[in-house]
Image (cartoon, rainbow, N blue to C red):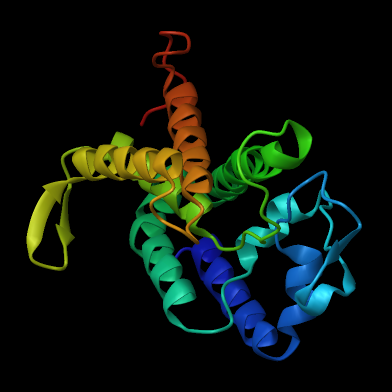
Length: 221
């Protein structure tokens, strides 16, 4: 297994185990919280409670936390990271892949932060003080890279239905965009998914020297 993928899997697993015991503290400080929220808000029963605040490091750390209430969230994300990430790390090289993954995480978190902070900063949308956590934005960036570098590679949905990687990426992007705009997937960070996908696609195209960047090729892949 390539070293970056292996270490990402180990780190995510260890932090998830830590969350089982220290979930409240870890989520308060390291999950992604909206920017511009009040310091205090009315909690259950009308009492004033402190509101967790946004800190810049959350743009990265939130991608290494997962829901401590069940195993499905981290299992699905780590399976996707392992399934697509090994091929991408072997293609890009470990150092460039680590940069790529963290860039996708930042792109995902930045777009998600803008969306969840808009009600507090601009009065757009319904205010909700709910944290965002999970590696899905980074994983979707890796999936975008897979779809661009290996567009016709069959991906087996539910292990039985083959679909070319490029169509899987486009389909997931369309579903996330629809769900994010319509609000039909409560509790899912659709805009983080979109941010990761777009960041991953733009980086790969930049390194390949393709539209919307210079036509000069920058690498062999």
